[in-house]
Each structure stands twice: as structure tokens, then as C-alpha cells.
Amino acid sequence: LIDMMKTILFAGYETTAITITFVLYNLTKYPEMQELCCEEARRILQRDDSITISDLRYTRAVILESMRLNPTVVWTSRNLTKTINLDGFEIPKGLRVVIPLTKLLVDERNFERAKDFIPTRWVRWNEEKNEWVERDHRKESTDHGEAVSAADYANFLAFSDGARDCVGKRLAMNESTVALASLMKHFRVSYDESKPVEMKRRLTSWFPHELHIKFHLRDDNAE
Image 1 (spheres, one colour):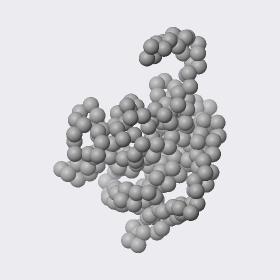
Image 2: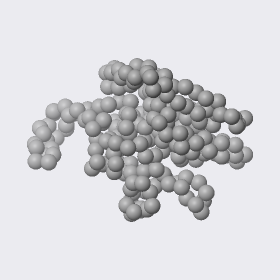
Image 3: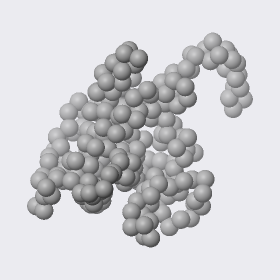
Image 4: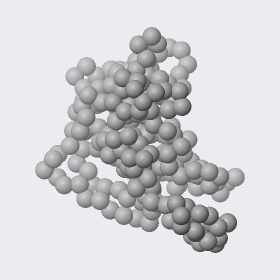
């Protein structure tokens, strides 16, 4: 148990920081999405009744979409315990298979308009409830008045999948959601376009060497 907690805390520290960095960078390109995050954060976080992080649905959708396009961990691998046939290719038992997450997450067979940053593939605005609600690809038709059809969570492998998926994924999502909501509540972000984005690789991670993101305190800053 102690070893697992160490893994969650230490392995999740840098990956969560990289995730938040990518989210902020992506939001610099979409001021209207920043405003939606701000509106949700102020509406949810000021409530007097008890709230949960899952109430910040649009904020979580922005994080999911950023992780889909810019996964912190770019590949994973599995050792085959039995021989399998994949699209006519026989892959023998005992072989180590490398799974390129960066390819799967932007494959048009898995996500419609896969290379576009569209948080509403995960959530939609419900006029009756006056709040964001999660979309379910099993219940929604492709023509739901949204820019794209609902995403299938089974295709979202940023945390890997199965019995050996990321042990700290819930902690990472919760940390990222709280951090982003807190920032968007008080700040707008922009990027210094004169500074090119330089990427750096470390083991399974792929992240920006440095990002020149500017934080602007909102004029109507909330308490």
C-alpha cells in the first residue's frame, strides 16, 4: 500500500503538471472556452451546498480534450500472454507490443474531427437543467446539434486501460480540475507568439521545454 501511494504521489506530480501546462497552452488559442470555464467555475464554486469535482463538467471536458491531443505519456506497452490475430497479422505469444497513444488518440476511426480541439465531444449544454451534462455515445445519435458526435471513452487511452491502467488517474484528474477551475475563475491566459514551442522527451513523456504563457487578472475578479 505504501509503495502504491508513493507511485501515485511521485509519478503523478510531474505528469499532472505537464497536463495543466498543455491545457493552459491550448486555452490560449480559444478565449471563448476560457470564458466558459470561468463561468462554470464561478457558478459551481460559489454554491453554498456541497459540491463535487464532477460538477465541473466543462472544465473536465477541456482537460480530457487537451490530454487527447497532448497526452503526457505518449506510449505504453504490453507483453502478450497468448497469440492473437490483428487485421490478418499473427502476433505471437510473449512478444512485447508498443502502443503509440499519440496515434490512437488522433485517429479519425476513434474520434470525429480527431485533430481539432472540441471539448463538446465530451459534454453538451442542457437548456432544461441550465448546466453542462456528459454526453453518452451509446444514447446519442451523431446528429445532436453538436459540432461532432459524442466521444467514446473506450477510445480514450491517455491513462492506458485494463488492469494495469494508471493507478493515479482519478487523483490526476481531480488535481487538474481543481487547478484549472481555480485559475480560470481569476485569470485569462494568452501566449507570446514570438516564442516558439520547443518540445522535450523524457522516457515515455513528451512535454514543452518552456511555454511563455501570460496570466491576466480578470477585471471582474471574483472573491
